[in-house]
Length: 138
Image 1 (cartoon, rainbow, N blue to C red):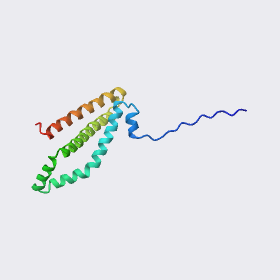
Image 2 (tube, rainbow, N blue to C red):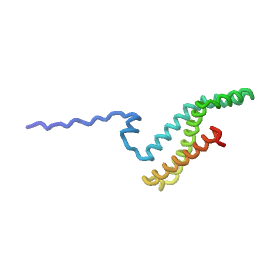
Image 3 (cartoon, rainbow, N blue to C red):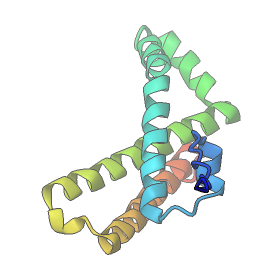
Image 4 (tube, helix red, strand yellow):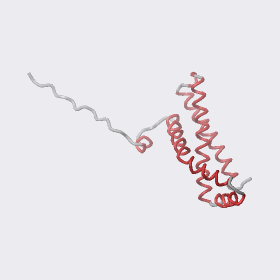
């Protein structure tokens, strides 16, 4: 008897974030989900530093003035803007997830896309308003 030709088994390898973002075309809801995790991680990692700055700013009036001078630096303002975006995006995406948990009609492909657009638009508008206030537009 002839031996059957064995097909090679497919190899499944771990993929990195770079491959996920470039090689795969994720739907908008998938991208919002990844950004929700990234913003949460950014907020979690920056929390000890932010609490330290908050504690230092409340120590005395002089330390608050030093803190205000520290915040007037453009690089610090940009870092603050990134953290503000992370907070606003994480908040909006969290509300989206809560609404999807309470209303199971919202868990569909169409609703996922529309709520993702709402999260992106609302968090972008809030970030733009914060940036305008941070950089002295009003």
